[in-house]
Image (cartoon, rainbow, N blue to C red):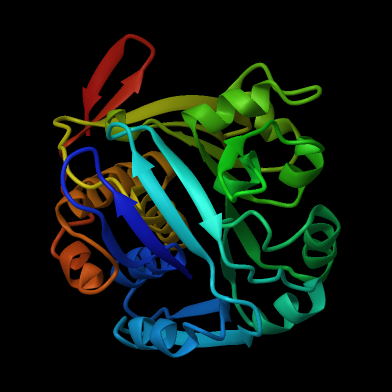
Length: 306
């Protein structure tokens, strides 16, 4: 759980809860009715009560919060346009031990690992968790591609040992800038479908208002597809990637195919642009149909309405 200070291109700065809260709201709004969401999170002692209160407002959300002595993570997001921003991280919430995290996730059939700070779990810890857990694991890899300057400013970096990281996950998500960093990593992939050769059965690259590009396996083949919205919207993009991943993850767990799941993820992430913060977000996302059409399935040069 991160407390955000958002500096828009135009307008005054605002402060509100973000981070994992967006993903929890997206999952709560879109999982089947008889499923529950367990949020497993480490929070700083200075904001632990406030974080618990925010999550208490999300329906069917079981809270497994661990309060740590360090101050809670805070991020300043300074937007240069709707797609580009700089981040500055402060606070110092320590990462998980793999045993503690595995115990907290006991009984979960599906896990969404959202790397918000990038310090939640190191590679050795991830390998240990994978060895202990039989759950289907979806990873939003965002902050694994961010290093940190002494003043907390985040800067992009390639991902060392990328193939070992990906071997731990059943599905992965990153944005297009992060995919370019992945390609520049030592021995990095040339194509999106190359990610399927090291472990995941699905890899997604989000493209902002243009939707997403997917690589996945079907009928023994590796397929690459693009799914986009018929009409893009403008608004506050904070948390869109977290929501997109939670919806994608929840729809795949519910048995939806990758393309249909991505169409729903596009639609709900787009709907969040006119909502600010985590509070009330489940209700806003619940108003959006998961089953209606309105997307375009791009297969090479052929466009087919869904």
